Amino acid sequence: MVFVTLLRPMSSRPIRLSAPPPFELWLVPLVGEAAADIALLDDQERARGARFVFERDSRRYVAAHAALRRLLGQRLERAPETLRFEVGAFGKPRLLGEPGCTFSLSHSGDHALVVTADGGDVGVDLEQLRALPDIDALARQCLTERERFHFDATPAAERELSLLRAWTRKEACLKALGTGLQVEPASFEAGLDTREQRVLIDCGQGTRELVVRSFEPLSGWVAALAWAPDRPKEGMTTPGSNLYSLH
Image (tube, rainbow, N blue to C red; front, side, top):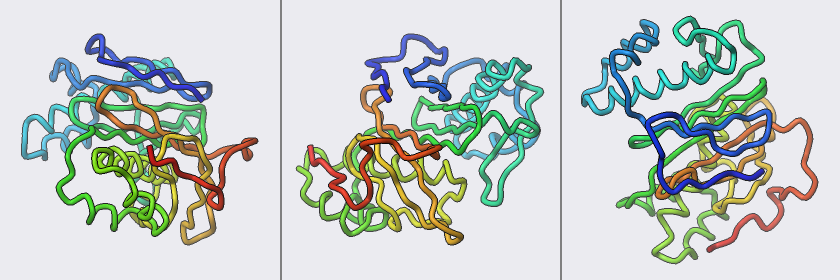
C-alpha cells in the first residue's frame, strides 16, 4: 500500500491521498464557513459541537463532521444532510441503513483524516507531532513490555515521533474494532515503525486480527490506517517476528 506524503495543504478543500481500493483516504483542512457546515449536521452533532469550552475546538468539530458528511454523501451520491448515524455498543458511529459503506474520522489541530470503504472494519488516527512532557509515563501506559524496550533505545530526538507513531497505530486499530479504550493499548503490539503488519487483539470475546500501516499525510503529522483483512497477506510480519526498526 503506497500513500502520498504532502508537504502542505493546497487549499481548504479535502485532499485525496493515494490509497488502493476499497479505501478512499482524505486529508481535510478544518477551515470553512461555519453556518454552511452547521446546516449539514443533525441535532445531536450540533449539541455536541456547542458543548466545547473553546470556540476553536467547536469550530474544528463542526468542520470535521461536516466534511465527513460531504465525503460520505459524495461516495453514496446522497445529500450530506440526509445521512443518519447510529452507534455500536462502545459508541463507534456507523451509517444507518448503509452497511456497505464504512468510515473512520480523526482530527488533530487544524486537520482531519477521513477514510471510507466498501464495508469491513476500518479505523484511522491522526496526531500532530509535538513535545510530550510526560513521555515516559505515556510510554508506560500505552506500550507493551517489548515495545517499551525498543522505545527506550530510541534516540532522544526521535522519541516523540516514535511514541506518537505507536499511539496512532494502536488507536487506529481500536477504532477499527469499535472498542475504544475498553481494550487497553498496552495489551497488544502494533509496532513503533511505519511498516504494514498484522496485529492480534484479545477483545475479551476472542482474538481479532487487523492490519495496520503508518504514513505521513502532512509534514509534522503522524497517521495510521487499520483494517480487518479478508485473508493474511503474503510476507506480512506477525507478532512473533522482528517488528521494529529504531530509526
